[in-house]
Length: 158
Ligand SMILES: Nc1ncnc2c1ncn2[C@@H]1O[C@H](COP(=O)(O)OP(=O)(O)O)[C@@H](O)[C@H]1O
Ligand SMILES: [Mg+2]
Image 1 (cartoon, helix red, strand yellow):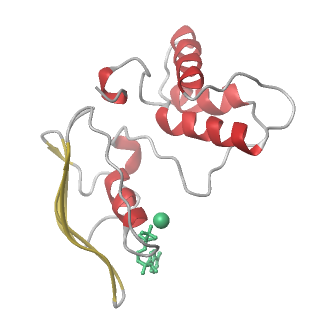
Image 2: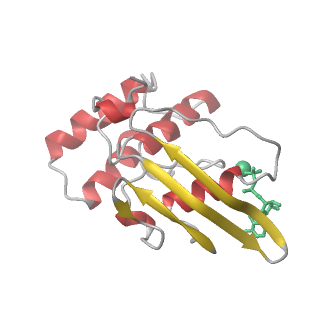
């Protein structure tokens, strides 16, 4: 995973400044938690990094590349939404495989990567309806999974 760098990122919604000149560096292999009261700008920050929101000011880098205005599908960033979702007409496997299929990943590699992320989140069953914890595990796997191999150094704490 390349270094993530925010340089003076600001996002306003009308008169509300959701994120105010935020400077931040997340290094390769680092796990960072944003902790703060509701409304302090955590989600807005993550959405800027993923590309769902373009900041009003400031710049965002992934490694050497500036991505401030790059759309989310070109950033190769996983995102687990707060109100998480799976497509109900697909199995867990199909949900997780979908992003890789769009990228024309070979079938055997898809199978292996989906297995890896499911094991990473300790999701062991499929079929029937999902309990809430199983649902969360599956959606978390979706956020980790599509672009990223669970065995690459960038996804481990070290
Ligand atoms: N789409 C939006 N339109 C208007 N205001 C928003 C929108 N999203 C967030 N905000 C406002 O921006 C501020 C930061 O919100 P948010 O990033 O969701 O905070 P957090 O995730 O830390 O709870 C809040 O005041 C919130 O009401
Ligand atoms: Mg939030």
